[in-house]
Image 1 (cartoon, one colour):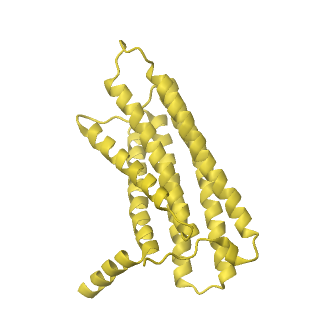
Image 2 (image 1 turned 120 degrees about the vertical axis):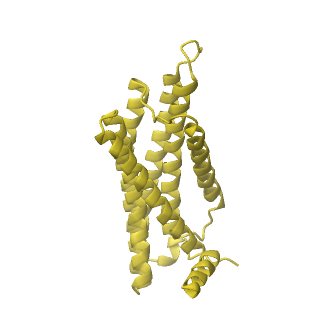
Image 3 (image 1 turned 90 degrees about the horizontal axis):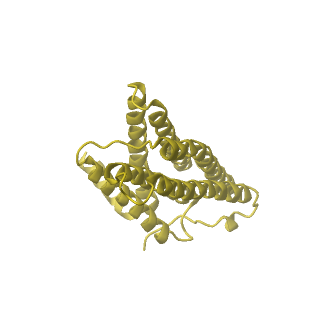
Length: 238
């Protein structure tokens, strides 16, 4: 038991890609839990369309992460010829982008509900400050990992980072809508819906662009015969 824990800790410290995979597994579980939470709220009859739409988006993000992790796990448990493995990873990268594109359709519904109906996540009491901290933490980590990204990152790591960015963007949009609803008044000179529309449009375009880039790059890499041109060699910390 102790040996197993020690090996896990050592691998977590020394294997960068393994650390990313473990983090993604935790994120997948948390994202799915958030989706279940919103789904339960929808089934209880509170703003059914709003909560159901949010649940669908978070389930899509969880599915994207799980798809990448399953592909990564398959690569670890099967010995594949290098070219076949590289193309399978490219196909997974492409598929992850396709899931983000489908998720953007759901995101469009979220944006419309925010702008037209003033829908927003409800946080009782001071819980909104905890939600704000989590949203900013998630956004900060997504930006940090994006800046830290290097050419040696594999497609698995790049795919997971792309999903993290999409997740963080929507969290910030949802948080903004909740904060404006909680603290703005009719006496304010600005219309909260205008801010939500602008932010929602920017977030939607960014997520759409991320998914499109992954699809195009994944398709291009699948057509490359020389696997040396794939880039993203396994990262080893020095």
